[in-house]
Image (cartoon, rainbow, N blue to C red; front, side, top):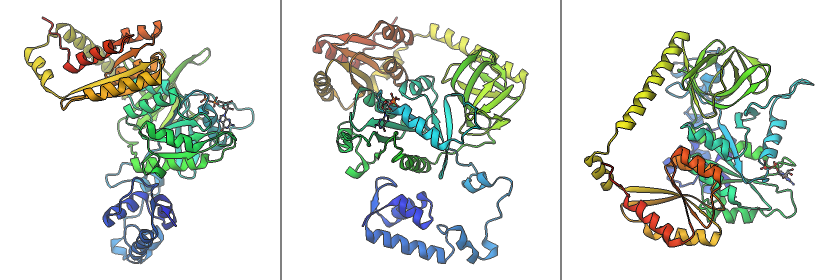
Length: 495
Ligand code: GDP
């Protein structure tokens, strides 16, 4: 019978990466650590590992090192930092917990899934203690910590990304088994793809009698996400946020994906982080949640966000406990900002107040210089020629009234690609464009083209503010003409 790679690795007490390396050495092809191996390969691997263990080789479980001559033994680990030492790579940067975001169509169960995980995987507070929502929480699993961003949906994700920060390492795309792929599912997938964040698909509501997980898997192939069991590399986990069935599997796949991504951060490095969310509390004042990405935050540190700074007066973890310091992949709520920062803003630290002020002053200076430079900027002939010669990438977001018109449009556009022009349709959606589309366009440098749908006033306004081209057409060939202009580069010289 067939055995999954990571199961075999677990059974044999070998690290997944080591297992994949062995398969590479054997010339066995696989899609991911969740791919299955045939019996012969399993036996070969078992034999190799048994040999290695007998010889005290690297794949051996720690117990086997007793046969290693003392002179070759690794120096004893420093007892004070067991976690970091056990995780340390050759260059000494320890692993960090993955940060996960949950996206998907409305009502497909994002909130329910987060609630279920929070309920079962977060240490319960004493009776009467109410844990405040701070924008993220830490789940403790048998495979270690997983941090969940608990604002479901792709708006939070994209708002953060629109500011140039990436906070999520893995995106869970929740799809209800009784509804399959819906417009926001496609959007969520487009956002994760644009951010190059690995995806895991959670097919939710499998407890329902009308659940049809197979249909979801087939539908996924229509957006080029091929489930692993169909020979692709997308991990699909059937589950129920209601009964909890399958949720443990999802957590395991998250840890597995994190392990393959080899996420690391140095708690001793200079601090950097991102604002997850902030709010103003009538009593406490400004409370901002920061995700520590690198380094360690300590009470008393000075933080700089954009052109503002503040001193950390108090910190609490996502469980509401007061803490003195926080390392990588920890969401912490911070008291000490004088104004509410915006989610997605990057946070850095300064040694003291003087250094914080200097950093702010230099940022103000840089911004003024950049503004001045932009005003004085003229396109030189050389630059224009250069931009005409390079391979062009035309990034588009398409919005249309029906699936039929979308497909027709995509068909025509596909035929317009040339050797030196690549057309990337970042998202093709039914219905009017959303704020999320504008944010996606702004991070991806895309043009939004609408066919037979009318953008709302607020979306048009945001597009204006962000300088995004948002155009609407009623006649398909006018839209195609616009694409032709974009393909040509449409560099109108400004003299
Ligand atoms: P969201 O909009 O994606 O956050 O979806 P919610 O979590 O609010 O769920 C929408 C509805 O589906 C609610 O009525 C939930 O109780 C229900 N729901 C969520 N997960 C499941 C599930 O696994 N099974 C069943 N039967 N219902 C579910």
